[in-house]
Image: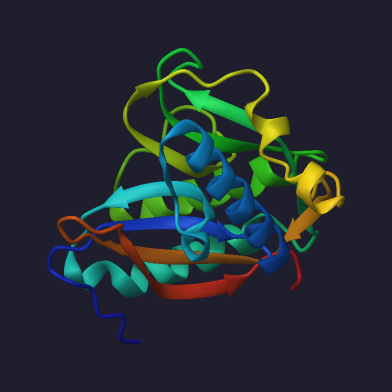
Length: 204
């Protein structure tokens, strides 16, 4: 199995969002960026990062593809539900460099899949098992300088007043696909994510 990698690759593993959830979060990101003076993450790149691998050997592609599939399979066939829990500013609401939609893990399956995939990828690269717990989130907005994020920012970004639709991303949804991506960076442009492989999650 050939899995060509760039010499200057920057790999990460992620769970892909359902199209409707990604679109709703992209709308939120646009409204947050306009209100707070940040840069919204492009909607087609929104995802939940499981592990950032950085640069890996060019011949590691097949091992990483197998590891991603093994990690997902080890987590079992059950669905992997999640829900958008609200907005989190990092490192703090008073001096935020990014805003993220934090994800809830209603039945604990998200943590199981994340741990299994991270461990499998580390093993494939001969690295120690990753430390710390997975922070389930989707980065929505980045800031060039620290900004203050008001407590009402998430509610204000819902668009409910304009659309009459109410909050549109609080529903529970299932992750159906995991992927290995290469982040291609060009000066002055947002990163471009190229999928190396994609595998089904939770019996999808």
